[in-house]
Length: 183
Image 1: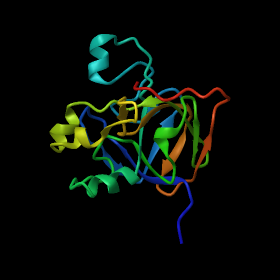
Image 2: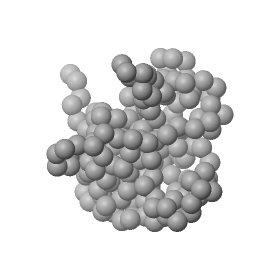
Image 3: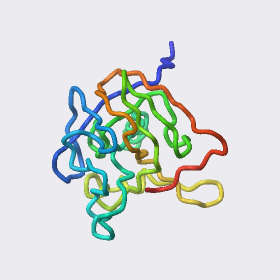
Image 4: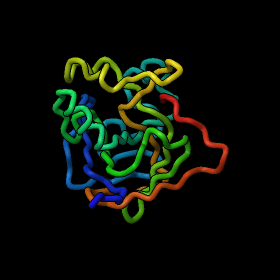
């Protein structure tokens, strides 16, 4: 029997700026800030490369979400990826995150809502973690455009506790839908 549920597969956070995050029993999302205690939590941007450009820009990358199915695909290519390894806060199962439009609201668990802002733009650090991984999470579409497959980013619209096996409900924004771009 095929599992048709959409749910949280794992949660992770880290209080230091590093590539990977430690898996947790649960995380607490804070409205307008991100994951409580995570190094990327805040109203303004926290990713070091973006802080260097303009530390006052809004933090559209409060929560990093990856579909767990990507880990399995990468394993088939010889990579060993565990939850939290790619720096995600939440891994999901059962939803095609990369096809969601900008502004999609993910209702997670009892209370939390994350609004999707865009695609994660994988950087050189991903190859430092495992050589060749950057190439493995990038692709080309039929028109030759770059396809980023390393997850999506979002902001916390409503806080709440998130843990493994929490249900996820996808709420699409009104039409016309805007395709996700890197943030």
